[in-house]
Image 1 (spheres, rainbow, N blue to C red):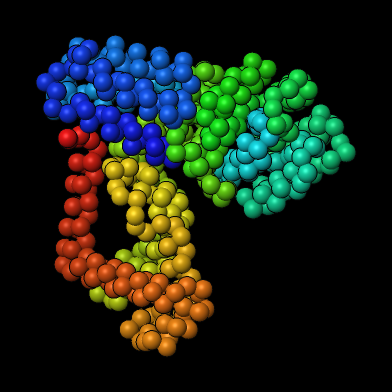
Image 2 (image 1 turned 180 degrees about the horizontal axis):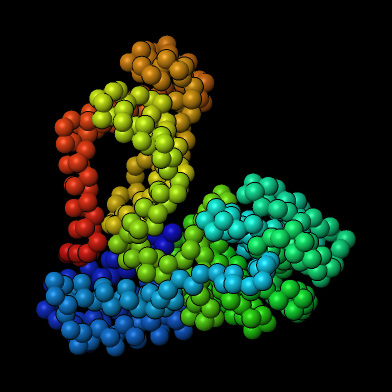
Amino acid sequence: MFDSLSQRLTTAMRGMAGRAHLSEENIQATLREVRLALLDADVALEVVRSFTEEVRRKAIGQSIAVGLNPGESFVKVVQEELVTLMGERNDALNLAASPPAVILMAGLQGAGKTTTAAKLARLLIERKKKKVALVSADVYRPAAIEQLRTLGQEVHARFIPSAVGQKPLDIADAALADAKTRFDDVLIVDTAGRLAIDEEMMAEIAGLHRALQPVETLFVVDAMTGQDAARAARAFNEALPLTGVVLAKADGDARGGAALSVRAITGKPIKFIGVGERTDGLEPFHPDRIASRILGMGDVLSLIEEAERKVDKQKAERLARKVARGRRFDLEDFRDQLQQMARMGGVGGMLDRLPGANQLPQAGVDDGDLRRMEAVINSMTPRERRFPDTIDGSRKRRISAGSGTRIQDVNRLLKQHRQMQKVMRKASRRGGMDKMMRRLQAQGQVAQRPRFRR
């Protein structure tokens, strides 16, 4: 996410290294690169103009903060303006209403409304402990109702049935009455989209809004559509009293134009950002954290929060005790670590939030490698997983055939496991784990303040 924009801006910022002060002359070339980077990221032209002008105005004559050089001070100005552009703060959902609090999902067809509705239901159920009901008023798209029913079961939300032959207004009225009867805290209404904005579509959703009087009307936008996303958001905002925006499919957008344009154009806060197809792939949108990621500073705070939610604490504690006792780190432990990593968004999802990750070489372990490694381990017998040294040539051939991989993949896995064993043995020695944690903490503190060198 934002990979291309992040790399371009980081490169542009290096031009400020070694400056004695900030002036109109010495920031001009860097601002030009910033402007080109934003345009290449498909940020709306009007937004690019106002952004670069504000950066120029605030940077010239900027008093240099203690501990920062002029180049770092310029980066600070850019970061602050990115935060301002995206909304300065995350505005949480307003659910302070007589139950059920109604959330209306709006957007174009294919933007990801149905998946986002289910993701939002899961977030409210798991993190806010709400009783959530889902209903589909999309009577036009084939299988839309069945899709929401399936996703509702997955996230443990109550699904209110509807049918293609019904009118959307009738569905909404019946669902609201049903949710009141069943004492639901929240009712999420998925609406129909169109391939383009038209009067009929706007009239229908405006009618639903009048009937339901939702506390939140969220516009779901496909982040990959760039400026088109911002234009669609503006049209919906003129027809409906939107309360916020959800950026869906953000993991497929390496540019970031929608994130940087939609808030400035609509004036509505971006409340959530969606990544991937999994129903746990929805996060509150924190402009300050996203700005840090765009500038290559990472987002360690979000990574820690996700780890607290998704890492199996019992397994982690068992492994820690095992390592502390000096016991062997076997392939079953290794598989557990691969699965934990997958739950946190895989290698890409984790690297995306580490400081300086945008400057790392792209070659290395990817999510496909993780899946292959897990397949290899699953093809082993329990004894082979506990005692990898017993795996000889014939066993490797059997494991390779069973997992659909090559013998080289099996060899690579065993080599990586041996390397992990060495790390674990070091950590198990007296003070080893404490020293490792202190080292990582020190590296994290250094990484929080980016330095740009020629």
